[in-house]
Image (cartoon, rainbow, N blue to C red; front, top):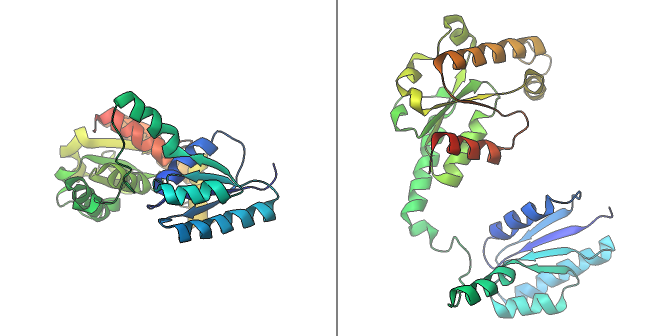
Length: 269
């Protein structure tokens, strides 16, 4: 596949355009260069974006893919008329049919984050992020009962990124606690976790994959050795079975998939 460039253009942050476009592009065996152009909210900025798109067309020798969520019609008009890319107007594709179906006009509001900082949802999400950072890797037991979910598993099984994703995307207070050799010797979960069994969720991983991940951090160490990884995973899984908490293998799953499955299993809205 010849080299191509994908542009994500918005008169807001561009996050919606890029997220939507990534989901679409994932259906194709291509890996385009990705360029986000946020806050394109005037004709002058639209012309600058057009020049960048057209330059990419000349360099690549192929039409760039241009995904846009621009709602300003003057800005969109410049891009639509002048750019040499394949334009995918995401809002235009969906808003017009919805206007017809609902019998009302869209307010054509720029950016879904425009007033978000004033909302209770936003403040709850910030509080969840702060809580999750404070309760990362078993740093503190204080307030552990306020957790919406407590992830447990061996080191590098995906607890921290999953916790942060749950906090950032869904406003969930997610604690995480590592299972260590001392826990395996006692053959029980850390005492601080036992009162919150209903909130516990176990993450596991194939030892071979765990060894690869740990070798990136501490190459040729006992910590990263396949033998040690097999021992830790086996002990952790046995412990979680004894306690009766739900588990999920993170080996082949993305953070988004892991978080979604956890929310489903624990009925977290």
